[in-house]
Length: 294
View 1 (tube, helix red, strand yellow):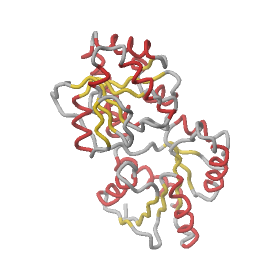
View 2: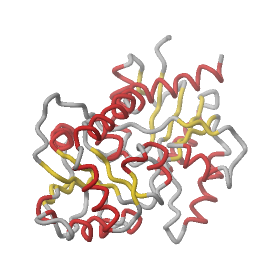
View 3: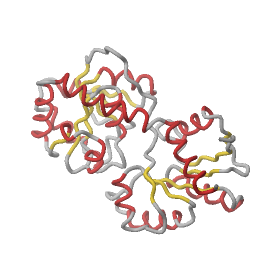
View 4: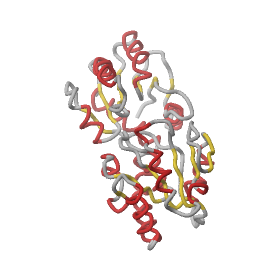
């Protein structure tokens, strides 16, 4: 493959994915540029406007727009969908985060094939023979009702000392547990590896990267049955009903034979380590470009 010129747009902060895409483009030997790029890629709607503007300047560039999720719980979702669909019509190719997002988007947009390319996980990996000295971890926003962190709190109240022992990583402090804020990949990786259970009680996710990252590191994710992406990516053994008693019972069930379920998490994690790797994702975009341009 010849060296390609690639322009990237989207949420460009540590908690976004664009910095990881940028690293992958460079690691794969391609060039990051806004000057006559071969590929223009926007990872989320915050980058669509600039990506489309660059496409207008360089019409021969191949424009790929990615849809992370549809924010069903937001009051302005109808207007959001209308705006996003208008942008997608301009794209040369549209990619999505998961089969669930594809199914959702097809209700409003069927002009083009929707290609599932997933999204980049953080740079996490398995630390061999790491002792599990932390029981619980929550990674994500605390003030978003769709994340249902209150369900975490109510569950932990049923387990002795658990509300103090859970580690919480994210941009908002929920007011319980050991709140660590936003931490770098290496620190998060260490915590994932030390943790027995990653709690992901969300009602809706484009993917739910803490579920994926947890399994890569050998943690067991506990997810809820009304979250369709949990059913897409998680073993059924890790899924329970969305209520505190059911979640506690699932934790107790797994704890009775934790080694068995830890191995199951690692089986899935080994696959996801490749599938969600930043170089894999960028190569997927390049394959789409190559298939359509040549």
